[in-house]
Length: 297
Ligand SMILES: NC(=O)c1ccc[n+]([C@@H]2O[C@H](COP(=O)([O-])OP(=O)(O)OC[C@H]3O[C@@H](n4cnc5c(N)ncnc54)[C@H](O)[C@@H]3O)[C@@H](O)[C@H]2O)c1
Image (cartoon, rainbow, N blue to C red; front, side, top):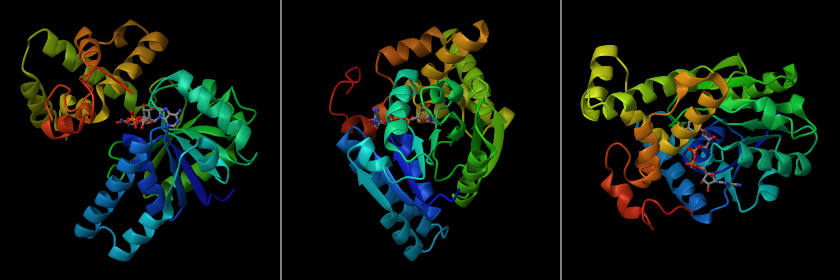
């Protein structure tokens, strides 16, 4: 099937980046979030990132303006998804939320619409099982920041059919991504390996082996990682990483048990860049916080 309109549900770190990439790929793009402020922030970040791309000579000014004009903003899942050929869900990493959204999408979308989740680890087969279109469900796992990162992991669930996979691969390529297609497994390729490295780094910090900055430095300069594990987890969000580890721990066993220090940071509201403080501090983001770190919503 040919995809022309893409709806993105959830306009957080990932949703707004996916909307940016979809618009650059030439798709009519409709972005939705429960929280109106998230949509306003998404609109301003998409504009800023498109302007940076123009400065760097990656896109022309007119192409950036056209992409910006292709993004629409919706206040309800119904308004966003009704006309979509592909819906990409990017709400928080909790199975109950994903199931709630997929149940609703299955009711309101056309029977031909493909439903994708950007989950970093959860079972697409389980999410798809609440719909009457499991063969049209799959994982499209983008990376943060989406407008810069090249990879798209496409996850084939138990029932996903070839047409659905083919359409998702085409969309990924038109968004400018390199695609790998994998068979569903907890954490896929990237989240499983990355969660292990990040968790080990938290155990080391907790054991007092080295400072966070030195652990980051060691991985960057000694192992050639482009970012240290703490810089990366602050970007990803400590809550998102904890959710992934809890799921891996439950499904794959003891070696994925989340480090107690990570659990404690999340309890303290130290969620990373988005909350102004994670392993490191981000005074600019902290100044934008409307409530204490531990108060959500
Ligand atoms: N952060 C990363 O680096 C990263 C990378 C790859 C994949 N992911 C995955 O992407 C998904 C989203 O993660 P994120 O980091 O963007 O989270 P986030 O917390 O930044 O954003 C989630 C957004 O979803 C909105 N939301 C919550 N419930 C909703 C609902 N019912 N309907 C509409 N909007 C709703 C929230 O208001 C928020 O704006 C998760 O599954 C995560 O595992 C995250």
